[in-house]
Image (cartoon, rainbow, N blue to C red):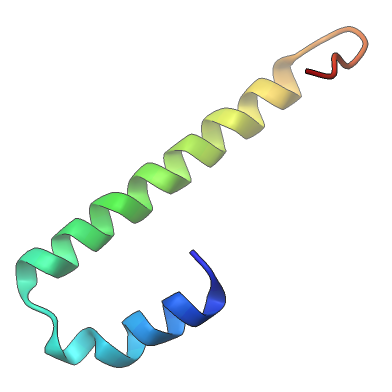
Length: 52
């Protein structure tokens, strides 16, 4: 998400329903989890870098 999208969501947060907020939270948790997994994979990888 871009900074503009995050700012818009923050400004409109008062008008969002609980279900919308729960979905946003789930999406953000999934994104953080994917980034954490990617970072762990990059750190744990040994040997020369492979460019794909």
